[in-house]
Length: 419
Image (cartoon, rainbow, N blue to C red; front, side):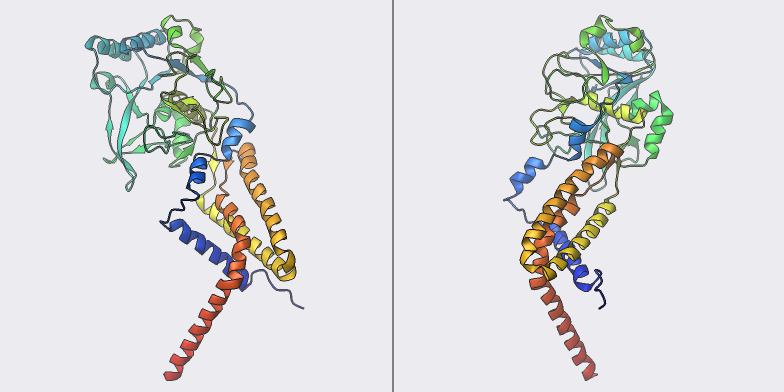
């Protein structure tokens, strides 16, 4: 007796019908209020966060970067820090602050003098007015000319998904450049620093051609709060350390010095300019943000200089995997339904539980060992739905297809007979 191929009408039709229904639901404007609270709880959670915060081997500290806290210093105090740092010949200094408006003239003059004495200085502008349709920013708010004349300009905006200032701000990714409405582009703070420090490695990063890069977090500074795993990955100098020149000069020479806010001092708790990152040990239902924006930028710089990138499978791979896994599940469940109908629910439910567990673990292990981010969300959804949907298909959709086919054939015959 000839064996029936798994590539038969029912298996193909059921798989296509399931994807059609999922597509309709995905495009539907109807909000399922009953699941909104659950979705809200997990909207900022990714399985790969567990790898960053729990399962990765601790990377070595990055010795190319020195992070400096300016705390609550005014512009005169920042100028004093820069003058002290310049004595020890850093390769480039970047300041994570916006100097958009004038302050006390004397203090502004001191800051401008310190900038004039810096060989390679990076200051930030602020991107304003993002046009979602065109994917460009309307304009850039630049530092005052008294400051910008001595600097290369980058932008300090980070991707967080937050719509408002008080929203949860989680930073996983980096845009290699920002497109402006006038046709120009502006590099982010981290990329500009890397470009000045090592143009070849920065070019390799930009030549990857990705619109978005996943930040491969190396670690945090020691923040004494316990909010972040993998601390102490960067050399950090506090406000007074720099003002008193209380550091080894070799830490500064030919290095990237990044200056910004890390709290009033390194031992003080502060939530200002702080973000959630994948290094947060509480990766579901987050409690407190764990990393200052300046340290987020430092991690991006370290990723570029160490060519330590995270790859991501193309979007079509997620759909292809989902379709293949769904098809073979349909074929298997069809066979179980036909041969072991009495045990269908028990067997298929057990298989679904096992498959879901496996599908949840695969992205974690692939990410840990290969730095590859694979999205199996759609695949997991199809596995959860396929058992019940197959019964809907056999009880309703299949009959509807054959009934429609019969009507079409009958109508066609009538038309042909009248001709």
